[in-house]
Amino acid sequence: MSSDRDEETPRRQAMRAQIDENLKRVYAAALNEELPDRFRDLLAQLKAAEGGAGKGDAS
Amino acid sequence: MSRAAVPVEAVQDDPRDRLAGAIPRLRAFAISLTRDVTKADDLVQETILKAWSNIDKFDPATNLDAWLFTILRNAFYSALRKTRREVQDSDGAFAATLSERPAHDGRLAFGDFQRAFDQLSPEHREVLILVGASGFSCEEAAEMMGVAVGTVKSRANRARRRLADLLHLAEGEDMFSGTDGATQAVVLRGATAAC
Image (cartoon, rainbow over all chains, first blue to last red):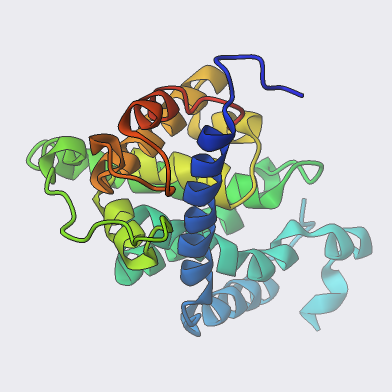
């Protein structure tokens, strides 16, 4: 395993694991924030503008 | 019928069609960085606009999330640089520690953890979310952050240690039943490992 550098103690690993587990919860909580419509609308607008505006050969 | 004008391959491969799917993760990253949903949404909006108009700079062989996250964090930091002259280094500014101690069973209370996380500098929150929560490798995070891999690792270490400080873990406060303060100090010092 990759545990050569300063003894990777089980306790240290356990602490890291706990911190990372909580970080994942922070991120998951952010992911669960309700998504506003504005982004979907924005993408739709961008797409519409592109379709309507001067479209020669897209590249 | 403007649709007919679009070449077929371009339609199939257009990475812009994948933007919508990436928005929830992009926004979660923005919220993690700013800790403020309103600011996060403005950043996401700015990022979508930039991504849309610069999509030709995106290499479809690479990770779209990483590309979008990079745009977002660059926008975030350039805005932050403007305000930072007044608000100096938030890292040390809010040195207040938390009143609650870790629960007796040694598990961190999530509320405590969130408050500690909120007090980290954006740079520390960023590195921890990238490597600790959203599943990017050290190398990917280094590229996104525009720093060396070693910097990512040491920054992640400092951020974890700062979290531990805020959570009283460095004062010999025990995260795991049966750990003594000396062991804890060693634990905190060496939290290197991968990313």
